[in-house]
Length: 83
Image (cartoon, rainbow, N blue to C red; front, side, top):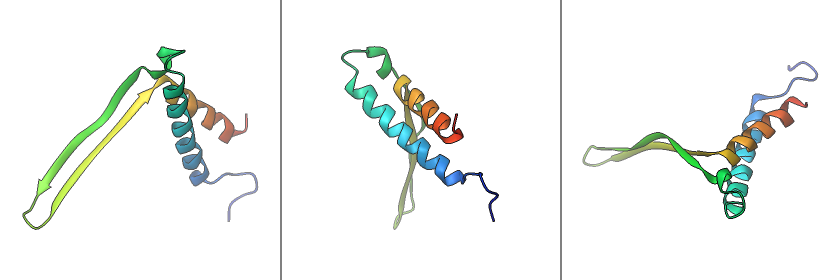
């Protein structure tokens, strides 16, 4: 059993996902007013395909990081920690 007052790591994951989504949305909405919020850096792996004849597998992961997403992540962590 979990000690009283400790939080599940799954709650942190949910907070981070919500922070990413809200930060990305706000970055796109405020792009015309504050362009620096939407300056984007793409990090990840380009899609790679493994074709085995009967099965084709594609694997890739790209994360578009901008200032608004970073602010959303920081706010999500602060809310999770209860500061």
